[in-house]
Amino acid sequence: MSYALQIGAVLFGLAMIGFFNFSDLKNTKLLLAFSGSYLFSVVVLHFLPELYHHEGEIIGIAILAGFLLQILLDFYSTGLEHGHFHAHDFKKGILPVGAILGLFAHAFFEGLPIELQHTHGGQKTMLLAIVLHKVPITIVLYALLQSLELTFKKMWSILIIFSLMSPFGTLVGSIFPILGEYSTYLTAFASGIFLHVSTTILFESSHNHRYNFTKLMVVVLAMVFAYLSILTF
Image (cartoon, rainbow, N blue to C red):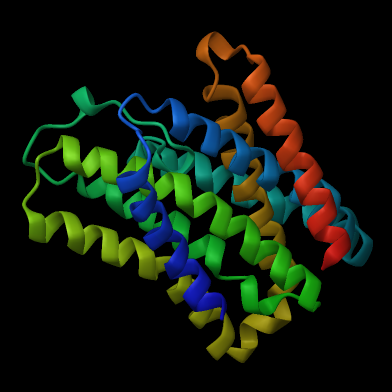
């Protein structure tokens, strides 16, 4: 089920492009703000308390490692993971290999610890966070690829591979038993990635770094939804 939902999130993001106007990215920014707020909330409300309860302060090193990895990936992906790109930074007709590989690596690492969670609730919480994050990022990736005027084959090959990277990470986490021994650290690592992505989204998704009423309500709604989802799971 987790594999289908991760792939379905990408398909849903692509379907939304056909039904809503994302030409000015205003709607995308609202989706990003919701997903970023949800990511941040589940890390603070669920993963951090659980991680520090089981492992203590040393777990912070793994969290920082994930945070730093995402900073490194940003050098290559130019911020696609948090919905940030400028079309003029790329040449039309040329595939930005570094940016795409950075995004693929991000997707792989965020999917890796899903099946390694100690509780069913933790697994559902992480899966939902990734699904909500993938929808707006798919829209942003599509917008970038379309602006580059790539061939149909190249464009859809990238989208298909992107849809499979997170499930591939989940598969790797489930078929190698030795990774189960480090599940707490891998979860902490992913939490560090989530913290970087979510805080960057919340900082960058507002014009002049200021929130209007609509965006503020979206952020608060995501926080409430995160809290209720954790209680439910």
